[in-house]
Length: 287
Length: 287
DNA sequence: TCATCGACGAAAATAATTTGCACGAGGGCC
DNA sequence: GGCCCTCGTGCAAATTATTTTCGTCGATGA
Image (tube, rainbow over all chains, first blue to last red; front, side):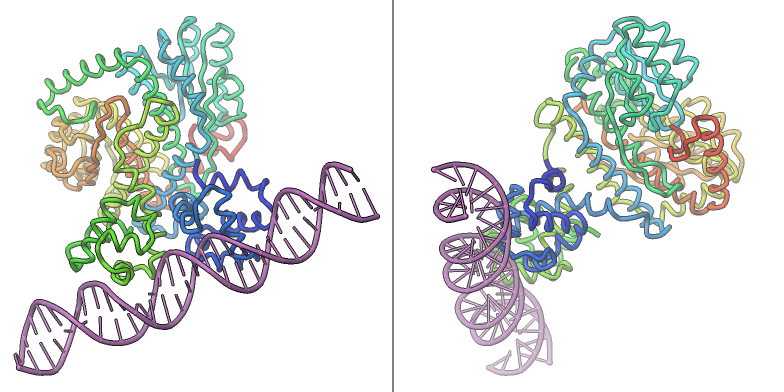
């Protein structure tokens, strides 16, 4: 657990003085990591010893230990609070894109439920056939990626971004199949319909989407990904990075569950690529 | 410029004592961020004042300022040195995937040349037609994503992951067109052939690939993305995150260059989506 | 040979942090 | 109601960490 989260979640249990300290930390990270204990104490209108005690409370050995921990988290956390890119200069745009992407990963990680992913991976690893659905560009990428990750592990899988096909595939699916659907908005009604139909037929449905959305409500297992969107319409959504990482985690877990099959399949694929390409086996699997 | 890089690159100009300090910092980040100035001095076999002077040398106000800066960088940097995931427990796998993804973004950002991206965006923004090529799963995702990003900005663009089609499209392309090709390995010979053909015909070619690879050598503008690959064959390559971020940076820059056209096009798309979906215009553009 | 300069450490000075202690508010118990 | 305990807190002293000052050393060059 990172210290930022610890402070946020523990805030209610702090004493009044400690809450004042916490509020400053959460509100002005930049100040907090650069301030001395005295400056921080003055700003929170408490005494330095109270700050020390606060640091101990949140699991640090000393104030400086605390600051280091804070700074480690702050790398991501501080910038999250920054508004949009400073300018349209290439260097600023790059920093904005990359920082937002790292943040998306960070936020998603914080909210992630490993036990749920384990369950998801379990279902997928035991599926006779996996269908990955997603439309609209972003989710179609996720569906395709999931297919791309899973077939290497020996799964039987097909991706579709066509609503009609999705419905037909769902209707044709059988009991031990699994449908994984992605929807960034959670409002893909056609996908929700597929989920509903599938559940009626006793088929496992897994959604990667916003919690508490129509798509989420229609699915059996829901990997909720709820991230704030920036206001900049020109910058592609950083949420894609979070979705992509979830795909990777799921794929990794499936690989470990089907380790033998995965290893054999990966080796077969690699062998073909190496022979067919240039004999260099240090390259990654699939350009 | 982050402090880690400053130390690495400035190492040669340091005095012998300072080099010893630098070596400890680079070699044992974890120790460095937790140590007091005395401990650090002792381990480097120098006196505390030398450490203070070192901190000033690398642009920090004081030792504690230095430590905070170090810790900010270390969040990514330290972990980079960690080997593979600790276990196959879901939580560890998730942390591994996400940390590696953040690292890929971090490393790519460090090596990025904003001026080059600006040039790339300039060519794309003025192109009459853009072709995005990529095969093999990872690069096909990148090519598709680039199309997906660019059409929203009013660019005329098509993506292809089919070698034969790529060659035909290249042959059919005209002078003011631009071809953007992605290759994670840099060894996609078919893509290199397209680049060579295109250059013979005076068509701008842009590669997102490993520097100093066959594909890079065949292209006019090369966005080099050179990241180390982990040894874990079960985890999807984290380099994808870096490539995806590069796509986003390029797309953002193109959007700013064609701001008017982008705005109009984005608005048109949004309007259709809102009308056609559920009237909720807070959702992102394209599910 | 000697002046000069930069690197460096010892010690002093300063600043920051922690500890010990005491006070006061609030709550439970007799 | 009064007593006592606990907890949160600040003050002051003690401790510890950091920075500054100043002087030495060795290399360099006139």
